[in-house]
Image 1 (cartoon, helix red, strand yellow):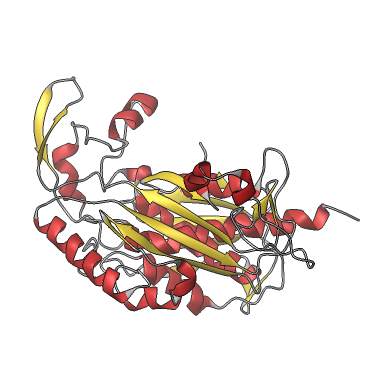
Image 2: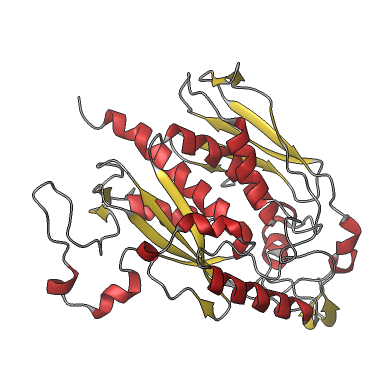
Length: 353
């Protein structure tokens, strides 16, 4: 059922949005890794609901409890089991959609595929599952010693970050609720999100990610190219509609003579249109990519839909929902990137004698 991600560094998640708990089992983490539990919890706090006025007001502490695989602060080499309690679900908010399908949600396809569905918050299709990815990604980050993974918001609705990434202090993104590294743009984004929320509507956006100090050689040359696995990882996140790395679609408007990354004598490149990946393998340059998120599907306005019998009906969203998902998606993007890189780092140990 696609609940497992990775080959050697493997995460399996479980749980539903309104069940007692969500959690996961992380296999393949080498023994002897000292873990900073506060750093893992910090990433969860960056993702958790209720953290600011521009996100869902569902109040969850999102405190992770580790059940196995860690002893005296170090990994033991055995499966790492963990869970996060669901403390504040308010399932009654979803009684009105028990027999109807929300547009652009997974309701209809889940019903047709499985013959039934958990309508409370979307059940397994809810983005609440991504908290499990953040826990595992937090461990992956610590396995990737020296590698820096920094995601941030570059667009919210029609407001975009126009400055070049290398001109910004990316740490500034954690100083505002939108998680955009430019304070002026961040303020405009925040105002826009609040205005849209008042109207009961939603907007989408883009999360950028910059990865530094990646060792040369991660990725496999055919089906498991590094950028292909990063793309799969990002497209597995709820609400994601697009992924581009390096020059992306902009590179289609360039000539080969402009786009080729010429080498320096040490093997680095003078430009980086390749986005740190050539032939599906990391080349030591910075990896950078963008992830596009659609507008949140649940709107607090009346809309037309169908019920289980195919009848046209009127409905309206209720409850607590994000008007724009990208501020909370930042740590999720980082986590999925870390899981991909950690898996390839372990696989790369078998690439030569």
